[in-house]
Image (cartoon, rainbow, N blue to C red; front, side, top):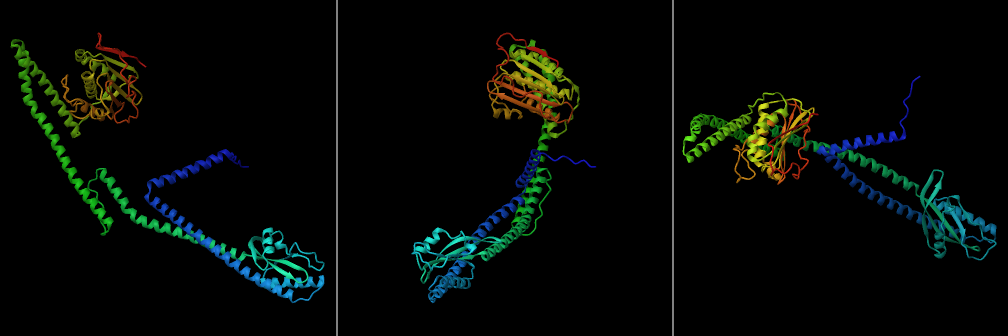
Length: 558
């Protein structure tokens, strides 16, 4: 005995139908969006089907109207001939009693049936006549029972010697057939006026029309299929070169500069292929020139930086000697020696940054990763920037809410990022507090530096990582920066597989957020720290105009 699965409830079956319908609609929508061939064939079939439908309806109505008019005219002619024959027979009769008149009328009905070719006959005595004892009884076949309207009888009675007709549905064993009833008058000698009604069936015309409609529908479907096949072949023939262009373009965009399109024939597609290949040749030549120029620039920067190290070392040694004896010099000379010492240090840092940038440009940077606690690294960076922050009146705060797990990073490069961000915040923080936040999750670690200084517009924030760029060109660098710190920091972050984001608002300060994966090469989806601060209107830290503690460490373990 086998167990049968219970049938789905009505609601479940309806949901399954809707799900499948939605999936089918989704697939069709995807084809419509992604396939030009599918759209072209579908549009062609749709417009052709609409045109065929309009033309078919017009032809069907025209043929139906012509068939009806032809059948009606034949019915009117046959009815007129039958009525004339019956009237002639009645007028030639000398019957004077009821039985004789009834026999003559029956003979007239048979004549009408023979001449008209219809068995649906009705002979009715017109009302409002004097009572006659010899008038024959009315006769009506079952096919016309209930079909003769009062309007038709009134028209026949009011207009003697004229024909009138109305459309009816004549019933038989096979069903209802369209037809007409034609009415006219008959004068029966000795009995008065009678009304003659003859019914004509248009079943043959309806069958002819149905056959023509079926033939037209089959022909329309065959024509649509043929049009679809022809359109598919033509579009496939035209689309194939377009697909080749798209595939070649993708390969070209991916860096395969040697790819070219095949050139066949002399038509427009061949012209397109030739133009595309010419464009690819030009693009390849320009890219090669730019690559060579880039290599030359990188080599130039590297060579210049290396060549400047020797004279800079000599200048540095001589400067150190003078700087050590500055107390023995007059005041102006002593100040000049101090300025020389400061600018020599800045020049040395600039050379180091230029060398680092040239390594990134050449793609020769390698990370020396090791397990590192970002909280301890940030604390060490804050300690090293303590005196500089004190000079500018800024308070440095470290907030680490929890999750202090080690991450595999290059501590030297991450420390450089933190120092660059702190230096930038101190320089533009206008003596207000600076908050360094560190947090982490199972996938990433993050560090943010928040200042409450001048801030930047959106346009300035988009260029903040450009080399040697300054939001205000007239503003001097107060801490001896080289203009390459943020650019190098971004390169360091990208080298770790992380990112460096910025949020800024004029007069509300700036937030730089560094997000790094725990393991090199691991993807980083979300950062453990939000980019936009909780106080975007700079309402957070207290007013720093009073006495400040230049190093506040606040660590809360999770």
